[in-house]
Structures are given as C-alpha cells and as structure tokens.
Length: 114
Length: 112
Image 1: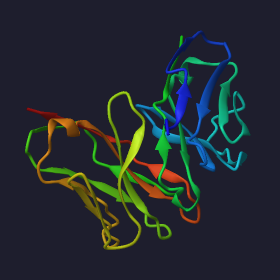
Image 2 (image 1 turned 60 degrees about the vertical axis):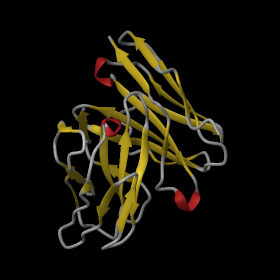
Image 3 (image 1 turned 90 degrees about the vertical axis):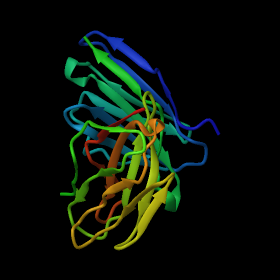
C-alpha cells in the first residue's frame, strides 16, 4: 500500500485566496483525521471522520475552514479566505477499526500564506 | 481537559549516549499512551504504545513504561544512533474517545 497520500506537498498563496488540501487515506481505513502543526501550538486535531461522516469538528479554528469526505478514498480541507496565520503544516492521517489509535500519517502539506 | 507535557528540546546527544525524554499526562480516565516519531520531511509514525498501568512499550531499542502513580511515560534508549535524529511526540488517547492528544514534540539531534 502506498500509505496516506497528501497533495500538494507545498502550497504558497496570497492572503484572501482559497486553498484546498487533499488526502487519500489507506484503502480500507475507516477513520480519517486532519491535524495542523505549528511551532507555537504543536499538533492540533482539526476534525475527524468515521466512515466518511464528520464526528468531531470542534478543532476547526473558524468558519473559514471546512472539510469534506465525499467517499472512503478522498477528503479535502478547504480554507477560504486564507490568512497568514493559517501558515502551517497540515497532516492527514487514517486508521482502522479497533486499531484506530494507531494513526498512519501522510507527509503533510506545507502551507504558506503571504 | 486532556493534555500531555513533554520536556522542551532541542536535545543534542553524542552517538551511543543514553536518551531520556520526559512525558507526563493528565490523569483523566484510563488512557492508552503512545510515542510517535517524525523524521525530517515525513509524517508521524507510531514508535511504541502501552495500554494500561505498568505496561512497557518497546520498539527499535526504545522503551517507555506506563507509570500511573507518577502519570508519566518517559521514553528511553540506551545507546542512540545518528539515525535516531527526529522529533518525538508523546500522546494519550482521550477519555471515552479515540482522539489522540499530542505533546508539543521534542527534537533530538544525535551527532557522530
């Protein structure tokens, strides 16, 4: 298996633009998580899905952030409009069933908002 | 709420030195405890875990023991290698949920 695949690896955009981050979880995994990593705040859980259904989005910082999982093999995290304080590394992770605490992370998307 | 506190880095050691990275957690519920490792340019990956008090997790020469009395899960390795250079994250599972709460990470650099 190729593991969790995220795209793009790097994204540079200007303030006010829409940003879409993409994630393909490991085939067969039923949990998908979006994390944000910054130097100041460390690793923060933004939202997670179970069987494509959002379970907890309490970590989403504000209405500018939205996440979808239209099917078991694809998820997006969208920021509209983007702001410089959104600059961070965004990780997607997936896990399976009773082993759901063992997360498999993608390589992340480094987002820079100028 | 749930939280995990790790010693602040960075930590720089010579090859073959002994490593300890301290981690403490809030004592709500009966969490499982984890150490994840992040190599440069990669996502986190599970290094070891322990699910109940007095359990010892081990992998690749690393060990950590779940100490309920001190709410600690310190990571140790007897002899580090240059290839161990990475950021190490302590984490706990949520009380009644399966969300993981991570510490801020400790960067380890091992020099030859």
